[in-house]
Image (cartoon, rainbow, N blue to C red; front, side, top):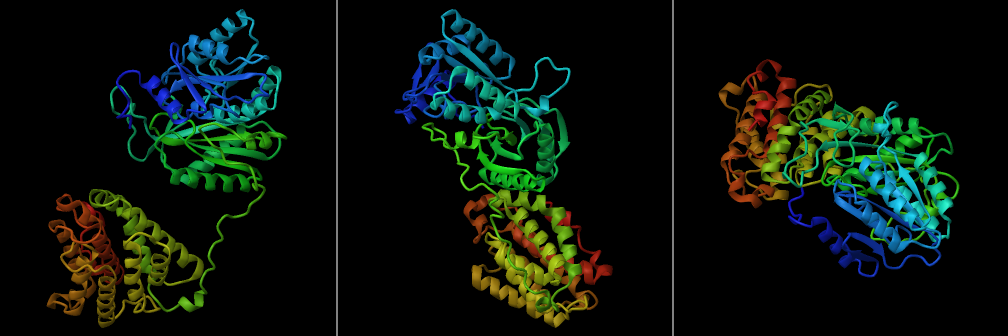
Length: 569
């Protein structure tokens, strides 16, 4: 969020900070504000000048220097630079063959760059322009404005920078730039608006679970609003629309996966992998995938995809060395690299038969899916907020493993949580599932009460040995100990419903953690802030015993509260 911009002269202060960071590369000039490259390539015959509203960093300043731009003209946040900035920057950097202006297709940018071009021509300086208009969302037949200019600007500036260093003429650069633009299309989505520097709040409201599809880089809302689909579905839709819009040619593309300001590297790299797989399925070779934040919209939470259908020699231009603040990956070794990660060999199904119940796994998967968001919210109050996703992801993988290998339910849970689920709680739950799997009959019947009591007690002992927690420390042990005690010494009312009584005890133990001051786990780091919040791990244990009761004692399991009520605290 934009909490830390100076109240006045934020753009010029940021420009000065960039020049201080790269003193051998960048010079900053006032009155009017513009930045220039200190050491352009000596073979350049044409200066490359670009710019636009601030708030899109690292565009354009990240491409300032050898192998990139000669001058950049930053406007105020989301506002075009003044024509005088462009004119003075161009006069200061013009080469013997003149100046090429690289302009994003926004009305203010177009007008001010055109005025600057007229002034340069009046001075006898040769000038040409490349208009970047890659945004597919604004490809509207009856629009006089045309497509907006967005993240393909990065590709244009990088390739033209390399061509300029090779001594290309003004006409050659203008033609190449127009060709790159014509073969590039972009689409952007957002889950949260950028923070307005003026008001300090998001520029528009977007409910949870809703996406703006087709947003612009100035914080414009999308062309439509949609319920957020799974990310692979979203990337597939965007990919298909982009491919359909590209002109025909070689089935080889450069793919830019661009963050809009608040999107993590983890997300961008995940989207990159999905995108490359989808392109390969459609017979398109990805010469290079470039994930990162290159054209932001302040701190908007979203991303854009840009595809450029490559022509002969363009990968060589991309691979050319640069001396700019931004560095770029190269196209080396991109030809059909195959899967980056080899899937593990599945364990033989026959060795796993005889453990657990698939019905329990399916019921637990349904419950966890229903309460994942609640568990996440609780974990955000006392920890790092990843518990709901970790638990749900592990259970989903266990279902998939059971489907693919025939492994019984709790055995699949044990394998996945011990071997694949990270964090603190994942392997601890793996120990619990391992002990339960050992006593699960093959025919789907409930485990015998003595066997289940022994397994629960053994799991409790193992988890305590590993984690060191005791009842009262506000961890999953509190719920598990309550279940173990009830199974080991069932009360009289448990005669016909021992699993239901054990689940009830686990629920009480889990909810009671809200009254405790945590002594173990991440909640212990936040002290009294955790008081009043039940431990998410304890709730997950209670839900597991609830699933056991639901499957094996459905008549009495109706006494248990609904899963949402258990976690709605």
